[in-house]
Every structure is written in structure tokens, then in C-alpha cells.
Image (cartoon, rainbow over all chains, first blue to last red; front, side):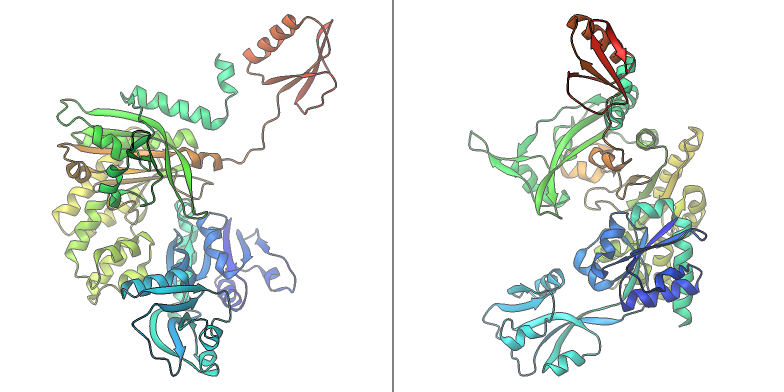
Length: 208
Length: 362
């Protein structure tokens, strides 16, 4: 039995559609219910529906053999997992953004609001810039508007949320997308199944 | 006594079995102090898994540390010009950072070190002992081997646009898509991707690894790995994997790398390798190879419910000496028994009553 941790939400729905297409169907998953575990014993697959930011934890600790997770989450958690495939889904960027009229004052500590604490720390460490991290869990765009921070480090997809809040990107940190990850120990015992699903997903991606 | 041994929890049995194996192969027990001078770790902190060290000031004013690592201390104390190899094993506690809780944790670790001239026999013996250790933990296990020389040999041939560490990190994550972005040269990108996919049963991967060899360094490394595989075949050992994305502790190990997994445990339960250059850094004129078994991981091997006693004896009255004799007789048969005062109710597989008439099964 191969267990797969799927992120709840749009990305999980998209990935499930692909998995269904390549032979890993489990139709119950599409039913409107609150179940979190779905199993198709016939083809030997079990899905766990988990919070997107928890997928890597399930996989790293071996509760799920493989999972689908955003690169942003991997960068932040530094989970000890195999990152087998870039699914090229949910593509976006992690950027530094600020108010449109913002001019950086290099003489003082930069206040950075973000939920990506490690990514922000690492980015500014490479610039040798003194920063103060303000950890937020949502509505990050509000931080510079309200004066809580000078800049934010956040995910930018189309940029419309930034524009609507009179903010703009001042630098790109990295691009991110969904990744297929695998538990290192599970890979030793289920390599054939994991390689097979990886190969099939690769074919779908390269055809798209 | 033999029956009483059977009553031990599985983890304890494993520890005893490992000690027996290591002793039979001529390894002697090595006892270390729990403390080491802090300055020693400060000097070699780049070789530690984490720079977080649990320290304290001793009564004589010296700054001491609770050991975060065993091998460094063993190297420090190793005899330099011993005519025979020093073969030793240990069962110790190390203190390391628990990144999840931001606290220190105690890790129970058992391992062995072979210090001296590490020839082909020594390589094969240590690898075999690693495999035998895994088999004692669980019948469903794999030993994975790799070689730093092979990976470094290939990286030296390629022109990368980034520092080598970045390539090693991508390789460690089996991230072929990241590796391909590290060079503009298409052929080099293909070689990196090929290296990343060299993973599987030894006999299946070996020919592919052979065809990727580009220099003597890679050839030498691969021939050492092949020697281990041949020795395993002769010893009737199965479950040997070759995987060049196995890159544990690249600052410390420079030769063979090993990692052991058992089914049902999410992390490696065994890790080790050859560290000749580390010996030179600590001014020791010999080579070394070893591995550690993470005993703390063994509690996750099989989830068993806390065991109930085989026999619960309700002590009502009667000759207490006779009762003790009855308990001893049961214990010698490997039956775990508990004597409880009359009126106490605890769960057991079998309940007895002891009174003037003796031991009566309920």
C-alpha cells in the first residue's frame, strides 16, 4: 500500500485529478464529506488529506510515503525528505515587497514581516543586512500599510493583492512550485512503486 | 537463566545481541566519560552535526560539555602507531539539540570503530557488522552504501556554476530538477541526473555506476563498494543497496558511507562510514571506519502495547517462603509474575491465588 499526503485545497484537487488520470484513482475523495483518509485497496493506494503546511511533516516522519508540497514550505521547514519532482504546478515567487513610495533607510535595522521566517533570515544574511523579523500568520500585506514593518517577504502569484494594497515587489528571492516528495526510509522499501508514480507524473508534466 | 533472558524487552535483547556480535569479531568495549572539555568541541565544531553544545562549569572552573559526539573523543584517544588495529565498540549517551522542541535531548547510541590500516578486509568486516546489526533489529532491513570519492570524483569533472555544497544538497534530496539547473553544460547536467538516479539493489545499479566512471578516483571508490558487495554475496547477505545520494555528514566522512533502515522506522537507524582525513586532521597517522546504531529509534520498530504480567498471584495467606519458591519457579520458566496483596485487582494473562493450600490457578 502506497500512502500519499495530499494538501487540502486547490493544489490538492489539481494533483488528485492528475493522479486519477494516471491510474491512482480513489473516487470517494471527490465526495462532499469530512473524511481525511481515502483508500483504494484494489490498486494499493491510500490518500491522506492534510493541511498544506503539514504535508512535509507527514512524509518526513513516515506516516505517508510520498506527498505533494509547495517548495515555499520545504524551504521554510528544511524537512529531511527526497524532493523527487518539480510538478510545475502552483508556480509563484517569494518576493520582498514594500509600499510604492518606500525608500530603504540603510542606517537602521530593517523590519521584515513574514510567515517565511527562515527564508527571510537566509536571504538577508547573504546581504549582511541587520533585520528584525516580525512573524505573522496571514494578511501579511497589512504590515507595511499599518507601519508594523518596512517590508514584507511573501508569496506573490499574480501581484494583484499587492497592487490593490498599494504595494510593489522590490526584489525576487526565489521561484516556487509544487514538488513531489518522498520519505527517505519508505523509498528504500517501496522504490519501485515510488519511481513508477514519479515516472508517470513526469510524463504528464512534460506533455502539458 | 536462559528463560529469564527471553522475558527481556526486545530493545534490551538487541543491545545484548549486538554486544555479542561485536565481541565475537574482536571488538572490545570502550567506556568514555560523559564529559569532555568544551574547547575540544569548539575546535572541531564544523565536524559536529550541530553547533549547540550542552555546557557547564566544573567544580575546578573548567568549562565542560556533555558529549554531543562519541567518535571525536575516540579519535582523540586513539593510539597513533599501534601495530594492530584498534577495534572497539561503545554504548553511550550523547546530548544534542532537538530542533523540534528547541531543547536538548539525550540520544542512546551504540557503535563500533575500526582504527588502523583500513584495508579491503576491514571495509568488508565493518559493513558486514553493520548489516548483521540491522538484522538483529528487524528481519526487514536494508543497508545502503555509497562513497564520497565517487561523488567527488564526478563533481571534479564537471563545470558547475555554483559551490559544490549546493550540488551535494540537491543530490542529497534526489532533486534531479535542481541538479540540472546547476550547470549550463548539457552533458554535465545529464551526468548529474544520472548520478542522482543511481539508486537501488547493488547488482542492478553497479553496471550503471561503472559506465559513469570518469576518472581513477571514481574507479577506486567503486571497486571498494564492489568488494563489499562480493563479500556480502559470499556471506549469504542480501538487502545491500547502492545509492549515491546517500551523503551523510560530508564534513566528517571521506570514504565509504553507510546507512541502515528497517521497515516501519522513518529515519536511518544506523549511519557511518570511513573518515581517514578526519584522523589526519586530529594528527593521527592511521585510517578509520565505523558506524553508530541509534538505539533511541528502536522503540519505534514495533508498536507494542505495554505488556501485562503473565501471572498475577493474589497473596491471601500461607507460608511466604513457599510463595517465594513458587514465584522463583515461574520466573525460571520465563513467566513474568507479580505478587499482589489480597483485594488488589490488576490485569494479568493468568491469575493465581496463594493461600494455606498453596498456589491455585483461577
